[in-house]
Image 1 (cartoon, rainbow, N blue to C red):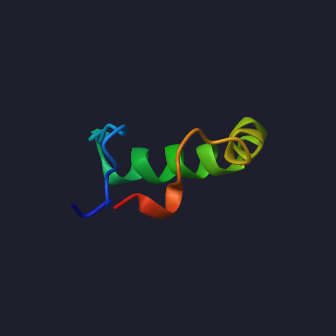
Image 2 (cartoon, rainbow, N blue to C red):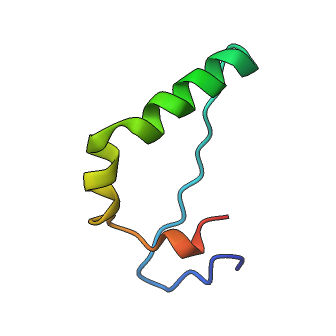
Amino acid sequence: MAVQRKADETVVFSWTVWPSRAVRDEGMKNLMADSRLQAMAASMPFDGKRMI
């Protein structure tokens, strides 16, 4: 209900486990700097505004 799922949609739940906060911080920094992520952001197959 939180994502206002329609009958033809599937809700997906996932998470990432990082070994430490330092590893997470470095990994996220690298992820956000990756140009491939920027290119993918324009063509996401879902509505990111409905993510919680």
